[in-house]
Image 1: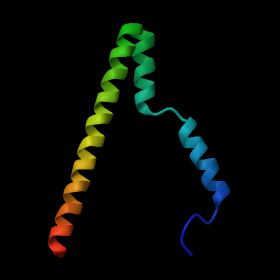
Image 2: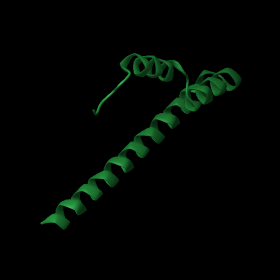
Image 3: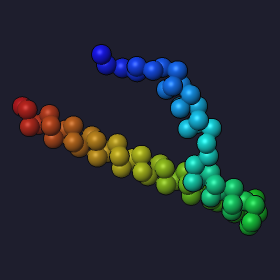
Length: 74
């Protein structure tokens, strides 16, 4: 059988992961509290830019892998 076997445990775990702040949130809070609002805004822009670049590279890499596999099978 494939799929989620214990759906309740999955939901509880997902909620815990969603509600737990990550290292980027802690970084932004730290900068905001110690350096001020302007530093917090710059930090959040930096984190969002990094996430955007990381996602772009991951998507391009996955696209290249899929394209190579499709060319290999033709």
